[in-house]
Length: 141
Image 1 (cartoon, rainbow, N blue to C red):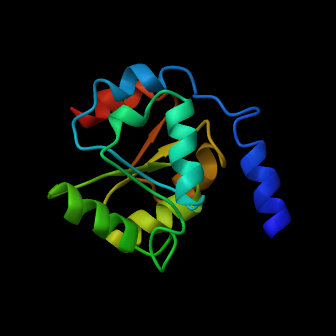
Image 2: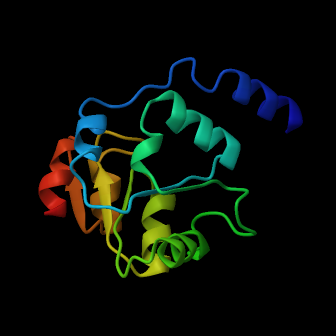
């Protein structure tokens, strides 16, 4: 695991890039925004910094930020507590993201162009599905 982690951290940004429209859409979403990843926190923060989107997020938690990782709802609970937000939506592209939202009792909006695609997210019961991140702005307002 240590060798994999070192290799992954060294190559974290080799092919990582934002999907089209993400940075522009983030600028138009209501605040606060947060990142909840199962990647280690240092890698999560490094990634959003390198992608130029860190300033949009008040909180960035990784899989090692809490005793439990997604799909446990503790990350969502911490983000809500620290941000003072009274409600939230979890946006993701995996069944782990969906399960996290359901465990936290918040809506889940699924990115159809991400990890799984439309059919599995729809079958799971996503509250909303979107084909481009710019659609999130419309959904949020």
